[in-house]
Length: 504
Image (cartoon, rainbow, N blue to C red):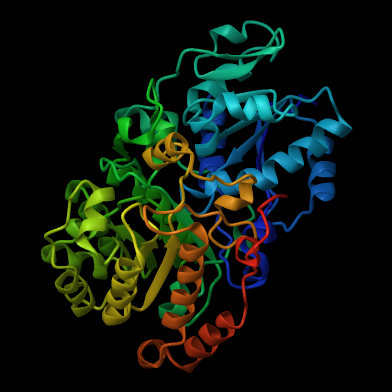
């Protein structure tokens, strides 16, 4: 029997990242990039498989046993997560499992791909002796070209590859990313047949319009990248060619709606109605998202879709079409309630937009809003953070996510943090918003402890607010209220708030 060419691994670091929230409240999302890379390698005639350690709830010993039993030529850790910034926090589980594998079978070859790796390829190789290869961007062509070799010779010919040689690290010239017109050829969808579809569950709030049924659930990209250049974001680092940070790689590519609708046809055939469109900005290019929505409407599908938009890309004329297509949730990057703070990190793109009016229009069309807010941006002080919380409480959207500002590797903010010598996470879990080891940034006026404490208290205040609980009771029923209250009883432990240094 021919040896398996490549086994793609989605690691399991759920508890290290989410603490007790991982047992019931955090989502379990399909590893989209692993599925897309598997499809690419298949069309290049390589044999592939995927092991989703998180969905299968495998510990490191169980995962190692399965991986070594599969005996692939190459083991590829696909280190992404539920949002682009999650790549860094998921390095926690990936590097631990890689070390276990290398200890048990030193001869195996391990490759890492993902946002964190793309941002810091040299550092990853220097820090982790178990890792043999890294991809310097999205890795599509690098992986298939590496598989054409014997994994030993002619490595210098594989564009985008990083590896060790003669005691040092070699970073080959960059590989091109997949061009927009080539997406359906080189990345023809997700290898759903290799994934445990019944294991995935959506976020609690996403399920509310769907009778609170969290399963089945699927997620996909209909586009890649983002044309914006927000300083706190690292999404575009996987597009990198010669650039060190994501704002120099702002590339937006999308699959033609007539092609991507095939994925939605598959979801409908499987009875999957909970769907997350994971694009950083789905509501951006009307020629893309409106046409896709129209195709969904024409087919009569009844989906419960969650997708993302910026405040300044939501237009009234699009909302009816979005709703008819099943978009029940729009996640808005509101970021800050203070225009000065917001303008500093978003290049001033929507400092003049009436956020209240936009949220009102969305809700008039029956679409629920998730407000995304960030505390601890560089210009934040206690007054501006309170303004952000006050805005969130006033808008009282159907869900709100509160983040503390992080210097994710690959973001311009990470470069600023290194230049200013701000304290960065010493462990990968420190990049998680929910981890015990969370290490947010300081601001010009506040210490990290102040930011994190404010964020945690703000989350609790919002989700126990009688006005908010009454809203979700009216819209989704008492069960939604009960589950929300249960979630507030899970207290996240924070080492930085215990007065101890953040170490493993």
